[in-house]
Image (cartoon, rainbow, N blue to C red; front, side, top):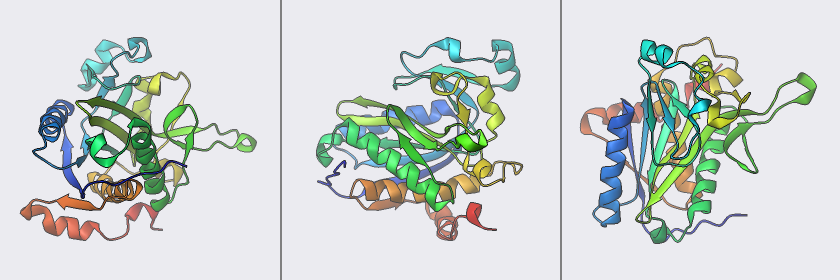
Length: 258
């Protein structure tokens, strides 16, 4: 069992809403520099992206199945970034979390951080009504297959990190109520034939359109679960004008309601 050691204070959590990938990428880099310099505390950014495809630093572009013309028609950019891993789709209905963590201050290495992120995804799924799991050798979060029903393992959460100057960035993407047809644009995580899942799909609610409010609720659950995995409390950064909305979001997540 992985042991997590907390050697510092709370992790600050910030909900950014739905924003473009490049804006969030620049925000991560800014916070990484400030965290490495000791100007800010550890932080986790929670958000939802406009549709975009990202490629890890050594990812194979052949796993992008859509043509450039189709991507231009849909306004979807392909961006190569510093993280590990293959191609990933981000878009509406998907929770994205970027942990800006100075690992040495918490007495952890990369593997325990990965395990904490996976544990937080699994707990978030459970809180929203879906049983998920790890798969050895396949980072991320998975829904177990059922051979008797002809259902394969399904990937519900992706993970890819980068460490610079001892600080993590990039992170996870967890499908809450994503339109899973968008994953047909790629071989998710560079695995041809991989079946993607979402919490809404697993609960039989895939016909409903993606809602940012559901992603925000899931983000609150995820942040608290991540803090618990690292033995650290979560301190929310909430703008005054959105404080009331956050209070309302502390009600039970609606995806598990009848």
